Figure 1 (cartoon, one colour):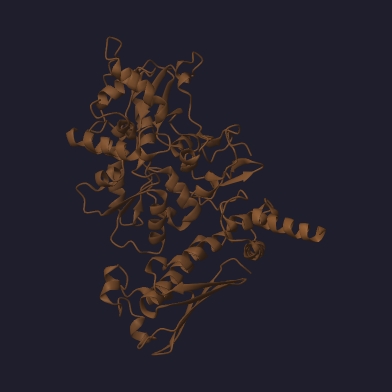
Figure 2: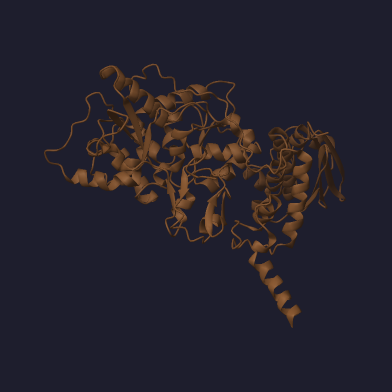
Length: 434
Length: 140
């Protein structure tokens, strides 16, 4: 199956760079990777776009399907007005001596006509969430919809919690809609306006190609944070005459609560500010899984809102950032300490940040749609598992012995893929030959 | 199909592992989400009870054509007054356990709420066996 054509995920493999070492296989939290014929292979319906394989691959063979920065200068571009939408996590990548407004100017100099910070849409999202939290029919705890990886994880592993996910769109999407509608009102009729997200993660790339709640995204392209960091640093140094002034109408998006969305707990704190709601803010997929398990068991009494971030420290820990997550989080909090304390949200221009509440479950673990057949496969899986060594070494190309048993039952692997079993068979053959 | 889990009595951190494991198995079988959740919650509560009150025990799960049967067996102190124990909020859990956020007196009521059928065989000094049945809708 072609990774490039996938609607489900944005992590792709560089076939030439992959050595088939199984590091990604055994560390994938979704158990979505196998090594077959010496190359890693992503089971696309299981991939949650967390990017852990991008972080782990020793050969840098895992990449995200972001756009190349050179495409901005492409004369054949379908857009004649290009808006950059930087994620708040971008501000954690540069020393706090470079003000947010300077980073925006530097970003604009890379070939954008306008910068509309995603942070400027956070207050509207927080208000919508607060309004939803006040509704008696909201299923508590309400789960933030900001992290697409967490939502995918819920769709696959915790489908009974789908109805806890708030029916609110994420700041990226809202920012794109507002920025484009404002630009269209200002620009001559017929202008072709494009919005480009500067992303810390692969999950957001998928979100622009195939939004979780269906429909089309207003985001037209995605550049990774790490691809813009060096050009921005170069532009920041060059504070001479070629500096470009920001578009006059652009919101600053540089208040403390707005930029705090780039780190863990920023969103939750802003969302419940001035309300009696209680929240938990959780970062890292493992801790998120534990909290979701507690949530499903009904063991989170008194919690109204769950901010779940798949990456450690929040979005500053995304797989497509340049700086270390802890340092980037630190830089953000330093910026917050000297930033304006309150946001002034832009005119929402009639854009309601709510989405269709229906999210489908993704039965990626299902063995077979026929219950009896699935049960027979499960029984066979347990029988095979009992014969496997139980070392979970990953040498077979599956993440553990259970996964190999499952792959065998699904007809995707065989028992002799296990090196221990193969060695045993080889030994028996040698003895027979004596 | 049969599954067996030993529920360790001395490791609070592992309480809930068996029900989480069962959840994954039921998802692979395509059991409806609501039924998976009810099964997991009922089993989780029983696991916690075993750890808190009985020093652990054994969990046996049968996945049949049209129902899931969970048998949780321990050799703990038994339940002195079952009627009282079934009431919402009644708890004999020690203070230390309550401080951990457990022992709210909702264990048995939650099992009853989530299982289609709950039978408890218990007597002081003889241990407790909780049997829960959960029907699988749509399976014939």
